[in-house]
Length: 218
Image (cartoon, rainbow, N blue to C red):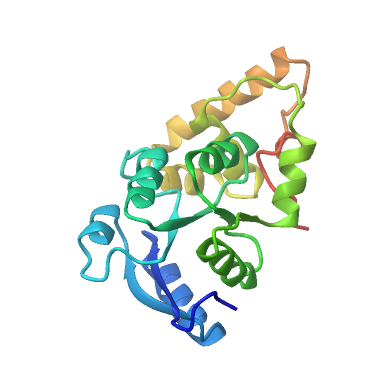
């Protein structure tokens, strides 16, 4: 599978400890050509880990540390490390920005876990990897005309459109429930001015899928 006889040395960075543990165990059991040498919850922990630099880093895009992802990717590139990003979000602008910054793979957390191994192997060999669903979302939304939403508004729309209640949206984004409600109000007003009615949760979900903010997984 790899171009050398030695295993691919992988580091995983995700601030959800439960997911970190589950992914670590899954990758260890699913691929004998990948060696998990580090599993950490923060960016500084990765850089100071005794096994760093590694071959490939599976990096959570949603770490709440205010460090630009482009800076993380460029830091990894200068040390010869390949990057595969994971995110809750599938919005095309975010994916394009990550790939343009030098990430070789981009995975949405709602997709099949088996894709992780494929993406790691591809990155190790210097090849890019995104799923067919995400590739379709990228290509089908290049010319979509909709209101200009901020990054935080798109995150709120993605989580709420995926079925999360406002309270859960607020918790995941580290904002108050009132702030989350104000984001939703602003989103709906922007769409109304653009000629789209997203007054209901169902309508907002359909619009989020149409505009590539949310991947349709059903």
